[in-house]
Image 1 (cartoon, rainbow, N blue to C red):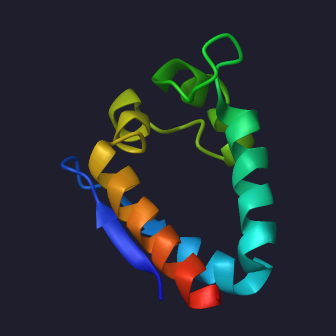
Image 2: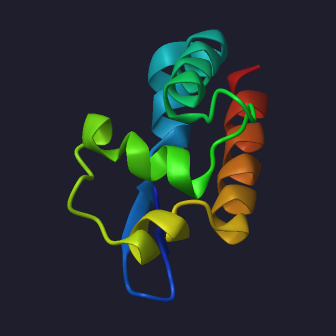
Length: 94
């Protein structure tokens, strides 16, 4: 089950969290999330910022995205929905 999430600017991001948990298991998925976070975070602040995401966007094949498109990836609504689906997938794992 993948969920499409759109932003106000029309960019749609597909949420692969549930299928990734299903494929990798909860532990494997958490390791992948950790690795991705480490790759994208601002090392000084310890969080993913707009600047750190833009700086590392080429690693994700997103070098041509506008600032607005990159910023929409940090949207609280997107994060809330993803968190909810992650919890649901982990609960279903057990």
